Image 1 (cartoon, rainbow, N blue to C red):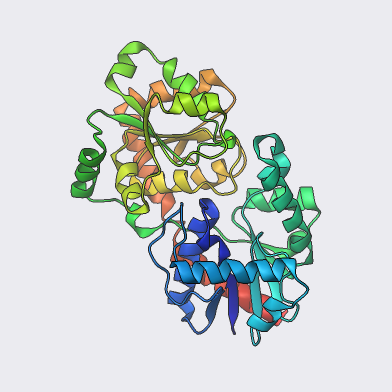
Image 2: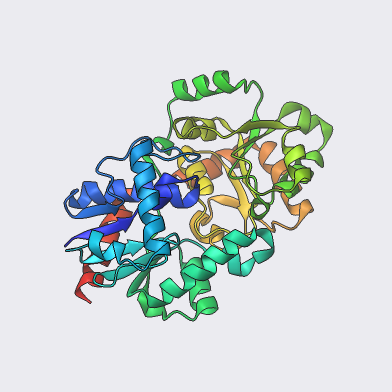
Length: 366
């Protein structure tokens, strides 16, 4: 069996999808070998994961994006030529004209542009609506959670039997970083006080304004002991939210090698997102043994189980009270940390790859 995976998102600025593809392709190749798992464009070696730039060199990035443009905006069957001999082509939302010969598959990461369209720029909405036509055409689909599958069936009318739920994985460094790495990261970023941590793109869906409000509503004594630390690139947040973020401990984009130790260094991880298809940051916090507060919406209760405090993300009172309770109760933090580590073991890239290979074999044979 020969599978070609559209890896174009690895060449552009991207967050969750890029994280997924990078670790997924690596795990698939370890499981099945590089001969079985190819990519478009051809990336025989994956460089270090960088979210705000391409993981490939300038030549490979330029030729890859140029080939994508030729495929998308000309009548030439570019991808048919490049995927000769492939049994399966796994596409992303960036490809407009998938090849016709291989079986077509794709991953549904979330349905956020349909559920909360007001939180997205017009370009995101157009891209996802275009991708819906490809999802309907695909032979088989992966959903990264049961919640995402349910939303896709309900909103797009996709046949449920066409969709297989395969949970994403958590990168190995997040599982219990060393005390030395945690100490080093505290020193590198000047984190001298215990802190509440948020990691993610600064954009409306992440509900950062509510987190800022809830932290400010804590008693002064709590805010003197703990600080709020926000890490992640500026996305399409409003000027007001961007300015407020910059008034707390804002670390900006944090390189991937620093994320595991930074997550483990936090006293509490807070992620009051309005919608998630999987929720990488919360899963990573559980693996790192950092007690988490997150939302009781979309996939987040499914991913966390009983290993996090769940709140209504639109309730200032619930988020404030959860922060206060967790910051001031060490025994609860220890309990949630233990539950989180146990829960996170269900999300391994090796398991994701094994299930994905079975999925591809079924798709190729179908």
